[in-house]
Amino acid sequence: MNDYATTFDLIDADNDGRISAVELVRVMDVLGRPVSLEAAQEGVRKLDKDGDGLIDLEEFSAFLQK
Image 1 (cartoon, rainbow, N blue to C red):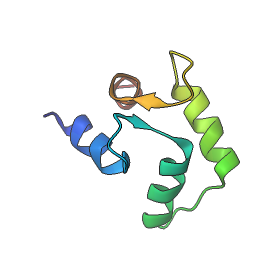
Image 2 (cartoon, rainbow, N blue to C red):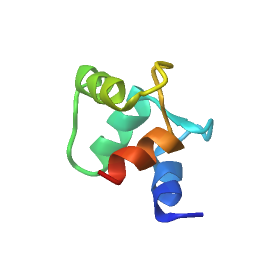
Image 3 (cartoon, rainbow, N blue to C red):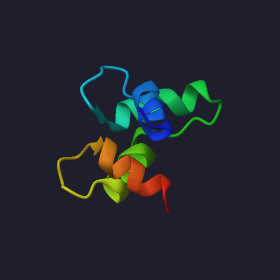
Image 4 (cartoon, rainbow, N blue to C red):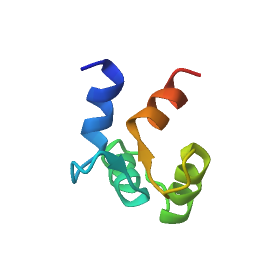
């Protein structure tokens, strides 16, 4: 498992292989950098290349490689 997958798995709380806006809100809260659900939804929209409303490992990795 690469470093991106390890980080992805930490954020993917329900282990469904995708990161939702709600999961993003939770992790940002834990990191002490709270964001609103609306801000998290916008972030997901920016990373979501396949239009399913969620971030998968491929989308997450592509973002981190930029």
